[in-house]
Image (cartoon, rainbow, N blue to C red; front, top):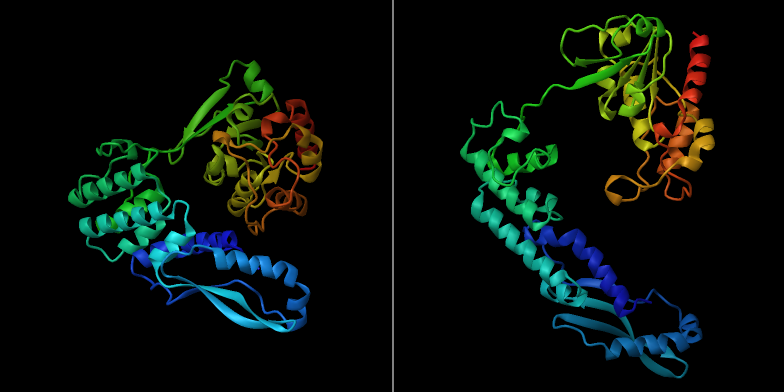
Length: 387
């Protein structure tokens, strides 16, 4: 049996899914929108539960319903008498739905109508409805910037060519605001196929770890701009690709080794460097978390022979006590949909599945830096001995 509060929760969800499509004219409001209140109930079941049904029904009969909201009733025999039983709520209009849902929905509807009218007044494109729906959760400032940015790109179709995100001359727009998703919305409004801004080339930083090289006075740190024709001072026999900067640039001495900071998602591009691909052994060491395993999976799609180091179930079990479930910005690491990640080993995949599971009670991340270097060196010695 649904109470008034239950119906409001139902309408809250319904409006969250349908309001913007209705405002944009993409779908009509149902005539009426019907919410069942009572499941189909036999005569005997109704008789047995009458002590709870009667006060529930009385609450509905006493409820002050907005104009356009109708309580539908059906006569049912209870004992020797006929009783009117509430069965459905019928809602005739969006106005009535918003009023009954309560909360912030009046303001949210007004905001939706205001935003859609601004888009219609300012832009002439078939994509207005799609942009309107995709940006429905943007705050007011981001929405205003979107409209200003789309105006500028539409008025300057050639001026942005060759600019980096930092160089785009729009007040209030900074490089981090011009993400791929925001550029997609700008392009849709401005009538531009895509906004491909110039990007600075990625730079790979790495450490020479070979003891003989270091003891001879050779440089210990170097960098390589992706796309440039550069080779390290020696061809490594072993390359360790590290997700975290401190680990890569402070990696201990080890014969023939170069440790590379991959800046997370750049790992698969780093693996395409000639001197990395030519190494006898390439290993990846990242955080034990969902992102780390996704990076490892993409890396193996480029270089299938890559081995992971200290990212299996045994490593997680040993160091989980030092883990965390906090993410940058104060938010919590949440469960997420499981991706196939077909390049993972069985041990890696078993940990990954746990870390993305909704009912996982332990830490969802063990940061790479929490595992001591001596442990990594011992594992590296074991893996290189198997070559």
